[in-house]
Image (cartoon, rainbow, N blue to C red):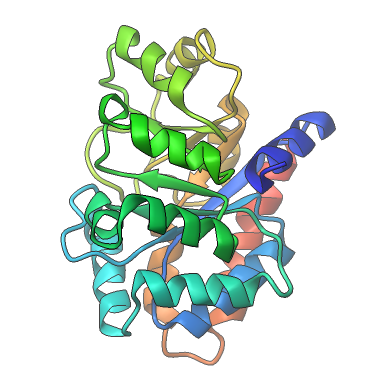
Length: 266
C-alpha cells in the first residue's frame, strides 16, 4: 500500500489525527532537508510535503517564496531532490509529497517525472496549478506508478465542483482553510466545521486542513475538525531564522515535535 494511504489508515484505526509538515526543499541545502526529514519522522510527523523550488511560486506567500529562492540558490533541482529522497529512504519511510508547479514536471516530461519520482520513493504529488479537469493523463500515470494525486479544495470552491474534485483525488484532500496565499495567521478560520462537513458529504478520503496554522494550539484546534492539519510557513520561518546555525535541526525539530504532540492529544 502507498505510504500515505497506509499512514492515514493507521491513524484512523488508532483514533488519532496527523500532522502534515511543509518545508522548502534545499532550504538552506539538501543535506539539511534530509536531516530535517529524519527529525520530523522521529517527532511523529504523518506526512512530509517538500516544496520543489520554482522561480514563480504564485500560490505561496512571502515566507515560502523566500524559501523557494533559497532552494534555488543552493542549487536544488528536481533531479537532485529525488537523489536526496533516495538517500533518505535508507533510514526513513516517512510518507513524502512533492508540492510542485506543473512547469517543472512538463520540462522533464510527465511520464518520466512520475516514474522517476515513484522510483526515488515519493508517495504523492500536489501540483498547484494543474486543474483536475485537465488531469486525465496525469491521473492515469500516477495510478500506474502507485502515487497519490492530491487535490486542493478552497473556501471559495462551489460545492458542485468540490464534489467533482474530491472524487478524483487520492491519498487525502488538502483543504485550504483561507483565501489567498500561504502564510501564518493569528487565528484559525471560523467556518471549518461547516466546510469540512461539505467535503465529507462527497468523499471518504482523509481531509488535511492547512494555510495559516502557526502554533500548537491552532494545530490542535484545526486537527480536531479534520483528519490532519498542515503546517508550513511557521516551520519555514524557523528554518529561515536558524538556517545557518549548527542547531538548525534540533531547534526546528523541537518546534515540530510540539506541533505533533499537540495533535496527538486530541
